[in-house]
Structures are given as structure tokens and as C-alpha cells.
Image: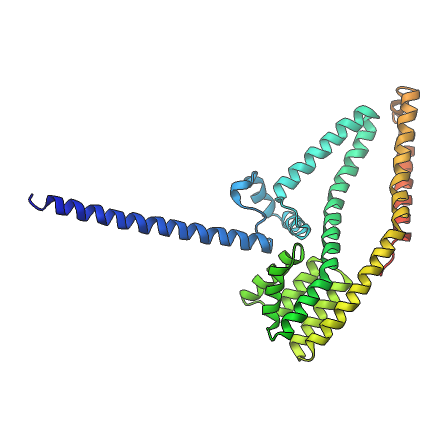
Length: 312
């Protein structure tokens, strides 16, 4: 009993040491987990941290199917901060809202047609976001080639130059190159990593850059001079693409304005003769004529888009 104060102090000291070790272990594990989540988010394996997301059960069910995995890859290619479950529920909510609003304003038949168009538009929205991200990446290619040329001229290896470019460039080039750098860090070959980048963001300019880097990595040669020449070519193509886009802007507006005029005429007819659209779509002939009219409007917009599509 005489050693009770000394024993108490020893136990207290031991408990304090164990508490410090426990806090250190917890903080280290939490930091490693956060780093893993960020790396998986960049590679597309995980679209967000679990604490910020909902609908985990729906996400698991979707990822268990081939269609859900394809949807997840399409979303990852767009750079959107959304999970497949959130996207699916958002699309369903928009489809139902469009059906109710259009059906109330025009006629129930138009609500069904608008819901189908909204479902098709949701898929087209992903394609548009991917094209938008690809276009932004193409605009960064001259800066990217300039950074790679400077890094290789300074004596850095191509893998190191790609990692440095990932840190210096803004999104989307920075995040996409960070994915390439992570893939190279885990042992993937340069050909496969750059090939995956070209598949995520398909474009002729990026394919030229990827081919140049792969050939230079395989056979060696003057990488710096090749990148310098490619930088100048990409700058000229960038200016040409901007001029072409400006010249074709009026045609693209026409492709959108013509279908909107048709909808405006329908609203005018329904306001002048209330119930006219209900009577028009109340028969099979009227429904067929409406579908043919919508098809002609869509065909016209498609033809205008194809005519104004110029490959630079």
C-alpha cells in the first residue's frame, strides 16, 4: 500500500502514452483513407466521399449491372460530381416533372412525347458535357505541350514531366493528367495510360499528342523539338477552330430556333381555340400527324447540325 501513489502515477502515465498512440494511429488511418478516397475519385472508381452522398443502396445496385457500370464510366468522363444513383433519380424526377407540366399546358399526349424527349435529352446531356470537357482540354493542349517541352528540355523524364504538368495545369487537363500519373505510379505502362486518356477524351489533337509521346518514349529522338513544333501547330488549330465556331454560331441558333417556333405556334393555337390540341391528339390520325411533325422538326435540326459540322 505504500507504493500506491507510485503505482497510480505509472498507470496514469501508461494510459496517457496509450491514448497518444491511439490518437496518432487514428489520425494516420484517417489521413490514409482520405488520400485513398481522393485517388479513387480522380481515377473514376469513386465519384465522391461517402459522407457527402446519398442513395448508397441504389448506387450499389446500379454498379452491380453492366448498364450501371457503363453509366458510371460516362459520368466519370464528363467530370460531373454526381453518382449514378443521383443521376438516375434526377432524370426520373425531370421526366415526371416534364410530363406533368407539358401535359397540363398542351395535352396529355404531348406530355408523353416530352417525357420521352427528356429521357433522350438526359443521355444527350452527358454527351454534351463530355464534348464540352474535351473541348476545354483541347484548348489547354498548347499549354500542356509547352510544359512538357520545358520539362523534357530540363532533363526530366517523360513520366516526371506528366506528373509536373498535372500539378501546374488547371482542370480538366490537371485532373486528367493526375489520373495518368497515378496509373503510371502503380506500374501501368505509358502506352496504356495515355491510350486510356485518349479514350476518355477523344479528339484528333489529343491523339496526335499521345502518338508523339508514345513514339518518342519507344524510339527516343528529339522530344523537345517535336513538342515545340506540335505546340505551334496546336496554337494555329486553336485559332482556326475559334474562327469556325464564330462563323457557324448563327446556323446553330437557327437549328434551335426553328423547333421553338413550332412550339410557339402550338401555344398560339391552344390559346386561340382552347382544347384544340386535346381534340387534335384525341384520334390516331392526329397523334400520327403530331409524331410526323415532331420527326420533321428533329430531322431539320439534325440536317442543319450536320451541314454546319466542319472538321478542323
